[in-house]
View (spheres, rainbow, N blue to C red):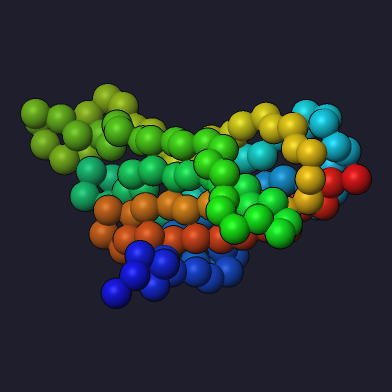
Amino acid sequence: MKLGELIQTGDWKGEKHVPVIDAPETVAAGEAFEVCLSVGKEIAHPNTTAHHISWMKLFFLPDGAKNPIELADFHYVAHAESPKGADEGPSLCEPKGSVTLKLKTSGTLMALSYCNIHGLWGSEKPLAVK
């Protein structure tokens, strides 16, 4: 089995594990713009000690390229764990992150997220650079 065969997809409006890529559809070459990633935008993902999103990654595949470029890596390590017990801790990370980018060419933004129970999830969004 190959890793790519393990990446699950779906519509983020109906599936709480899919990473959501919030970015413009078109940007100007060389101008800064923001990309926001999240999991659970429409349907909240559980965020507990036992069930949580551990990380998200953002990649960019330029049109015509063979390999994607890693743009951002977000790790969430506080899941309300505590010596008092699960979900009793004072801190909890929400699975969200943003990055400011400048691109020279059109391509596809690709995101991966990892749920500690339900595995890898992916999504893509085409992006035109004018």
